[in-house]
Image 1 (cartoon, helix red, strand yellow):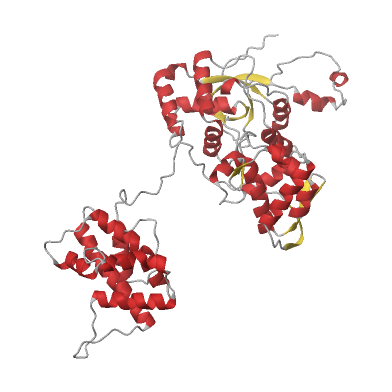
Image 2 (spheres, rainbow, N blue to C red):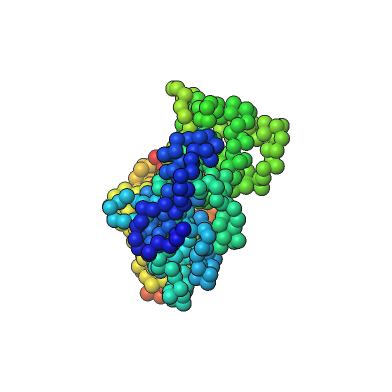
Length: 494
């Protein structure tokens, strides 16, 4: 039989022909002939890459709601292996005996959904258009492949068109075998298999727990990445949630493949997030944790007891409920995007660190505070030193007013309002009320006792009024660090 089909034509023809054979004889359950015939109606067709869509319900990743989401998730989950696969395709082409399997998207635009071959399609898409990988760690690699090997990229792919999604899933279940560091076909992990089982209506209690935990948008980024991919050890989680001791601790029972919970949702989420995070990170209480920690019944009892101890005072739910959920869609964090560490005082460009927050009343004092967070302390050291002095004075005045602190008077009966006097009275009030401990007050006391210290009233005054005193940016930043707690407590005092 000639199985060649002209590229670009959609031909509703059988690839396999059985003549007058009684097909029902060859199916073990003797299903209806129509049902089994439907399963073997596959068509081979060459399809333009532009007409192929990623499967947003690809079992290697958590379900997505867009092509971009699916692509980003595959990039994140596959990492460097996706680049290895792209190079292999450019060098050797696509496998002639393992054709991608698609189904009609039925969107009126002649598109097809990739049921088997999402990794291959993603690799080809990224070589064709590296900008699709922008902001990911793989962007540079695909830019290079695009520049050097654009002519070798397949623009049309020979595919097998399955009659429907169910049939494609059936054959997907029979396929996955080996890896070759990403260049070959990869077997489904327990996570991917569980997702396939769930779509087919089979019980997946451990996956239900994972999906329930993934509903939390505040979930740790590393844990989320592990759960959304296919590398999470679902077998270990299954072992734990089917352990009577943990079920008793968490108020859970497994009935008919579903987990019924008797405690309230918030508490249950905290417990299960803890369990899932321990498995995902391989750490418990900052110590290394492996499956060997629960490989006996006694060890599992100890584990359950420790989890319960870490989550006391569980509240009972009004009624039993089923643990399940739809994971929240949270934008993926690029593996290459490293979080910036907190800069040292020397590296800091502003007097007040930008992340620092202080609850202040609206008006002048708040405006000055914002300016101190914005102004470059090197380029505007004179302005910063003056604003620093004003900010400190207003802070002291507001505290004196709030606490009704009496200032001394001179011989003429006038209030003595020098900065040094006000600071001295505020410090005495703090010591009397215990607003700051002696240890916390030490930086202030040391500063004002040294007449040359920047925080000494006379020196701070000279920075504002003397033409000979030039503020040192580093010293300004160091002194803010020394008084930050002092200022914070004054504004927070009742």
